Length: 129
Image (cartoon, rainbow, N blue to C red):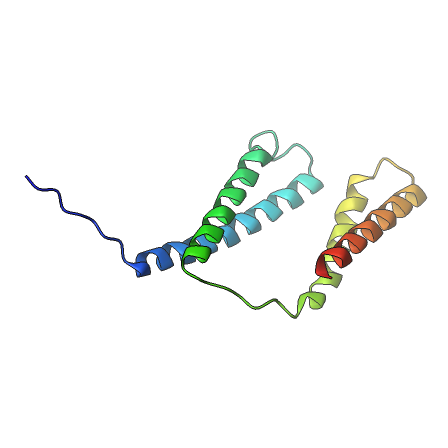
């Protein structure tokens, strides 16, 4: 009995890369929806699903995409329209941070939220440069 040598075509790896990319999108959408649900109703999701499991899955999928992309010589040009999404993310972050600080007084809540968003903005500027 002879064993046949299995050869995997480059197209199979390209298909796996594309599926991993789609899985990454689904994981990110799921993770953000879970974070929003947890922000609105604390303990609803975290009592059943651990955030660390989703984070580990995200890291594994990112590692697979990076490994396959490097082996398949896939590269992308930098995104140029990042500034269009920033106002929506700032508003969304402002609402989530403000909601998590409801036990503080209104003015303390506003000051903490604006300070946090300013720090996030400075980090964003450091990363983009």
